[in-house]
Image (cartoon, rainbow, N blue to C red; front, side):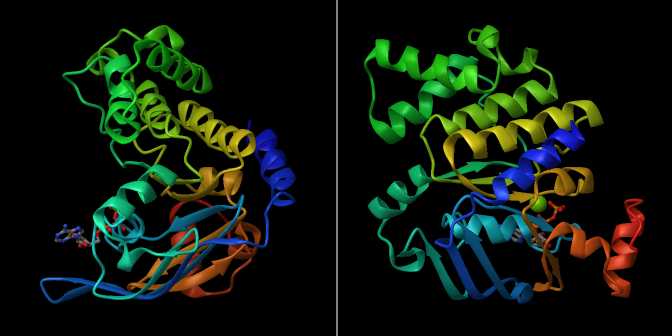
Length: 266
Ligand SMILES: Nc1ncnc2c1ncn2[C@@H]1O[C@H](COP(=O)(O)OP(=O)(O)OP(=O)(O)O)[C@@H](O)[C@H]1O
Ligand SMILES: [Mg+2]
């Protein structure tokens, strides 16, 4: 799949627009006086797959949570789809969260609900859809997108890690977001299942023309799906460019990082 995914990623780079869908400038966030984000900048173009890399604890998850106001930054600018996120009221934040799908680091399915109920939940809560026929149709369409129709009446506890990730992605997709934020979509999965999830991320981008930010520690994933990569270090952007440029770096810090993952810096 790697080659195939790479091919799709390259093909997709021609679909990247000039429109900026997320623009972040000088973002700061500290917890208990410890700075986590220390002046982060980020641009996401329409149709782009942007991968965020960085060691554990560098604030990758905090960064994307700021985008949908799950965390409020201390300072900086965040513009999403032309709106200043920091000035939105709660109703506008809810609307924003319909446009920006968030796939959490852990799949975050409700264990006490079946797959169907898990998928119906955002439709009822966010879109106020209660008509069972429409719910069924939307649920089955979303499951079809991730090839999990057969699991509609199963419980999350009976699904594998990869299947849970798929359902988590379906639950995000069901609201037809314009932007997808994936927090470690392949964490804890074996390499084959990881490749399948990478392929799914690419398919979603292709089918829906979504723009995505993908946080990952999986450099195979980054290579396969990134149109561009940013590397966070000490709460700042240390690198911003295409994956191939990253692997050609002479920067000692990046070389050390890549060597840990057995990616030879050339
Ligand atoms: N709600 C919070 N309250 C206090 N500290 C927090 C909170 N959220 C994150 N942090 C701290 O911010 C730092 C960055 O966390 P974050 O989860 O963004 O790291 P990460 O880069 O996503 O790491 P990983 O790769 O392990 O997921 C950590 O030190 C974490 O403990
Ligand atoms: Mg994280």
